[in-house]
Amino acid sequence: MYTRNVREIIEALIFSSDGALEIKDILKVLPGISENEVESMVNELNKIYDETGRSFMITRASNGYMFVSRDGYTQYIKALMPPFRLSRASLEVLAVIAYKGPCTKQDIDLIRGVDSSSSLKTLVHHELVNVIAGRPLRYVTSKKFLEVFGLNSLSELPDLDQFEELFGKA
Amino acid sequence: MYTRNVREIIEALIFSSDGALEIKDILKVLPGISENEVESMVNELNKIYDETGRSFMITRASNGYMFVSRDGYTQYIKALMPPFRLSRASLEVLAVIAYKGPCTKQDIDLIRGVDSSSSLKTLVHHELVNVIAGRPLRYVTSKKFLEVFGLNSLSELPDLDQFEELFGKA
Amino acid sequence: MSSLQAGTEFVLRLPRFEGPLDLLLYLIEKNRLSIEELELCPIIDQYLEYINAVRRLNIELAAEFLDMASYLLWLKSSSLISINSGTEDSELVNPMAELKEMLAAYRGIKIAARNLNERQLLYRERFPKGRTPKVEADVSKMDIMAILKAIASIRERTKHYVVSIKRDRYHIREIMGRINSMLQKKKKVSLVEVAETRVKSEIIAIFLAALELSKASIVRLVQKSIYGTIYMVRRSESFTSQNKRDPLRYK
Image 1 (cartoon, each protein chain N blue to C red):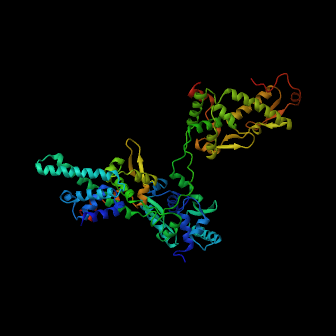
Image 2 (tube, rainbow over the protein chains, first blue to last red):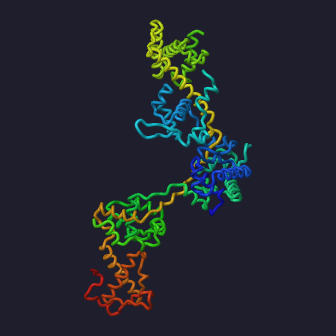
Image 3 (cartoon, rainbow over the protein chains, first blue to last red):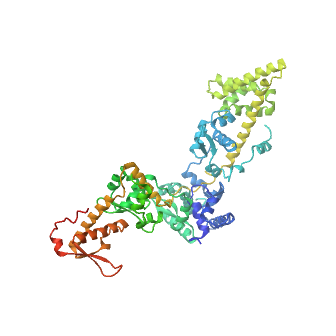
């Protein structure tokens, strides 16, 4: 049916995409293949990478799959690329948008009690946050946000109420 | 000396860098390794990919290395992408060439009343139009043009008379 | 703890506070109280003391810290009034509740931010695959109507006929010239040989040109069998003597 092994086609598709490739996109290219089959083939691929000592693997993120480096190589990669760290302010703004988004800058400022302009700019610049056009502009977290924080969807974030339980009342 | 195989460190570095990774950057991270050693390890990696049937390989480009997908998988990767849509201007140029070709850029500009350089470039780039060598260059539609428009040959282009029926006189 | 010590500590720690709510939360925690007990404790006083201490040191404070200070001052005075007068005016009670709500909401976000920070995997422990050159997308399939519409839009804009009868007339003249020069080199030329592109209209034009040349007695058309190759054979006498009629002037 296909000119190549489906497993290797899946590998090529994930390999060629910037960031995570959603499962539904894989299924679109390979009609007749089920989500479970994709998953088991990804597992097979990871087994091959493991057995042949590859420095990368496929991981789940943003309702799909993406290639990432294996943990042991971080120190070498870091020598080429500065690690990416968010300030506390940016993390707070990101948290507001993740939990309350889509929301306006005013909403964010109100919750944090301070102006969030520069953090917002940083987050938009790093593509962790998307802007929804309109008046006023509204902000939502992006696909890259899910990738960076290893989430399939925002629903995987713990509830704010759960935090209450975990940390108790201040 | 290194916590991982040098070969796999090189793999991880090429893997994680955007675009081609220059050899000097690899040598910076791995002091004591020579350019020749890098090259032979990249060859080893490609041999592993080949033997394990991977859909990608490392290629040399602009004084460095980068991962690319193997040719056989291109059609599947393309299926992920939204197809390229021709602009109105490009369609106009294509129409002139289809009916008047082979014709020069000057012919096309004269008929359209505007410069057609960028549209011509797009059409040549996407192989919808072939260039006939000579002075001046002349353009004809290609086999791919026929494919894209579902024609068996240019003779299937609607006749002038039909065209008159459809659009009337200006 | 004396207020001076507290003030000194605040100055040293100032950069850690993201805003007035952050500072208030810090004070509530430090006093081992809950947000609910905000008004029961010296927190408002401590906040104001800190702000004053910082201002005495000429350290620039974000406007929000000062806004909060005046808000807290106002809250304090209005609560004193409400206690003294014993009224149940909701407008005097609500601001404190509002502030508590804000503090609770901000604390939730603060914890969520800390949680996000712990979750960050990419660019810390793992790196994503770098971007490599994109495979080029295919041109989308189209209907021939798109070409016709393009022609119509050129015509509408320029009033030019893209595919005009005039163009065919020129074409035939040109092809007659082409045939003529080919026949100078050899005696016999097939119709197919003349074609450069095999575009339908060119084939028609070649055929018309052949008929025209035949009419002008410059060539003889020869076809050995049905569907066989049609040849144009040079008529020797007419070729040398330029006819009274210019064969290239096609009407």
